[in-house]
Length: 111
Image (cartoon, rainbow, N blue to C red; front, side):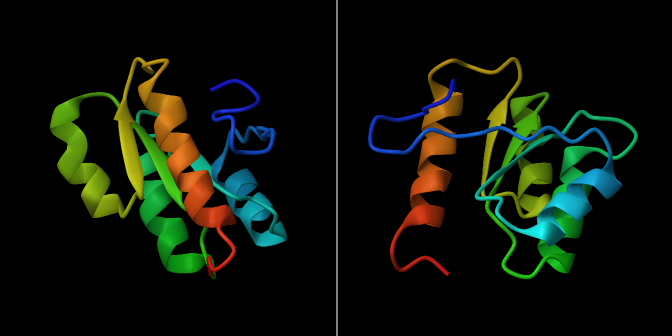
């Protein structure tokens, strides 16, 4: 996605977290506009993490889930991800999905 996934959006800054506790700490601190979670990560996969943060984080930011296979779309739905793309990341699909979630989050009337 680079530093600017779309021309109408401000530059983005990526914050990487390697563990579930680190993800929860950063979300609790606030200031995260969109989460990009790896559904194939171990031991805490992005799908399970997504479902957990949707339950536990007040005003949870939208989540873009990276899935290993298109057939896992039902798991993305179960996890309550706001969008999902398959791995390997497509250089057009990923920035478009990320930009869409950022637009929804940064919109003037967004909650």
